[in-house]
Length: 262
Ligand code: PGA
Image (cartoon, rainbow, N blue to C red; front, side):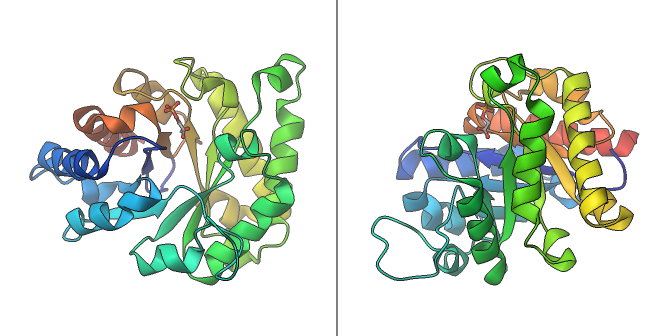
């Protein structure tokens, strides 16, 4: 990693209940104990919407960010079932996942909608984590570069340099999410470098070097070190392994060590 501060996000997806969500946070805080991990690593937790308030309350004295797993492209109105960025901010969220593959592919979210959601989140000072990544079928026919180029370009093209510089990008190959298959460090590094080079061509060197690009897809404590050691991998977006407090805490520690080593 360069001088970028590592970011580890926990994406709890649609798991747990109120009691287990609060227990998971308490377990995580206990796992960190008096360690200084949170001084060196930005950690965010994205619980299901109904548990944001309970989890936010449990986190209130700690430097762990609260995040939404998605947001509406609208701040309010007749949008049954949606949750606006301003509502997330009101609940204490500072970040939000946008464009997760389970929404792009499971719910047919388009690049245009994702771009609107980014704008809506930024309008209320939520820092988006933009998720991008190719499917297995796209990878098999060597379309990874085209897909990443399309997803990154369409997301960033309407953003000012000031807004663009706030984003974190999560490279999450769809075939690696929840499958136990992880991108090799070499594959992750080349995808991350591609994204950084796109930002370099759309903006400038300073922005490209500042934006954090994190990896997601079956990250565990056992494979985190080799991934985080890649020069353009600035942390991770963790699904399954974020549901285990000790495992997630260990991944955060590994991110801290990777930064120290650079
Ligand atoms: P996973 O999920 O770690 O369970 O593969 C990652 C994600 O979907 O963000």
